[in-house]
Each structure stands twice: as C-alpha cells, then as structure tokens.
Image (cartoon, rainbow, N blue to C red; front, top):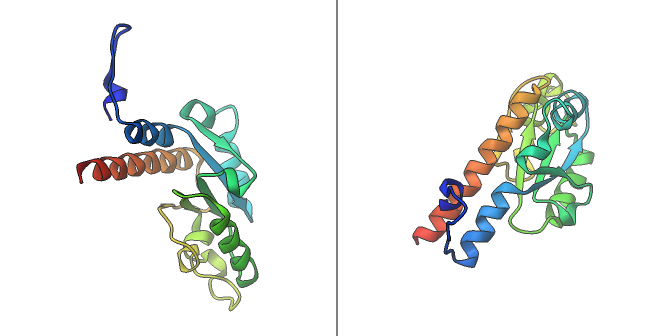
Length: 162
C-alpha cells in the first residue's frame, strides 16, 4: 500500500475507504490463542513478552473469539477438542485467519499415531500460516505474523486490481 511509503509532514494521501480499512487490518491483528500444550507457553507467550514485544508490530491478544481476527492453534488437537476449535473459529468475524503453530498442530507431532489425535488442524478449519518447530521459537512466531500481514496486503491488492 502507498501509506507505508509516504514520508513527510506535508503529505496528503487520498484513499478509498476500502484501501484504508485493508491497510489498518494488516497492521492491527488481534489474536485469540488456543494454546493446548507446550507450544503456547514456550513459543507464543515468549513472543508476546517484553523481549520480543508483539505490541510494536500491532499484534494484540484478545481472549474473546468475537473480537479476534486471528486464531492461533498451538498444541495437540484431539477429536474432542476439534469440535471446540471449529466452534470458536465459526464465532470469529470475517475476515478471519488461522495460524497453526508447532509440530502437533501442523501434523499431529509425536502423538500422531494415537487414534484420537487429529493429524493437522487443517483437517478441521482452513489454515493460512504454518509455523514449524517443537516448540517454535518466538522469532518464528513473529515471522509467521509478518507473513500473515503480507498475505493480508496481497489479498487487498488483488481485490483492488479487480
């Protein structure tokens, strides 16, 4: 978007309201963490802490699905929890995005042989960004959010090109 490249105090920017909302959406991501296991503690909470500071990127925690843009699924999802994950996803307003974080959420992890474990959260809900690792590093969580921001910007550009 053109807003990022504007420099100077005396600049005037003309935008359509859709362009402004798309720009704002990419820079104000409110996430709902569905942390089931160690990935949420070691990766997500460490990334949201003072050392890595999600707030400076415009990424804020919301505990309520109706106020969230992004759902982060971190940890092993079993069949009983799959119903809850889907229900929370459906409560989120459009546009909504999903980040699958860690080996367990991506593909079942070391527990994939058990019959009650879902081998990937993408079997339940559509996933936009996958963050690998067991547990993922806080840097990779931040990189995943930056990739999600890039995806949102690309969607906005594609919508404007139509």
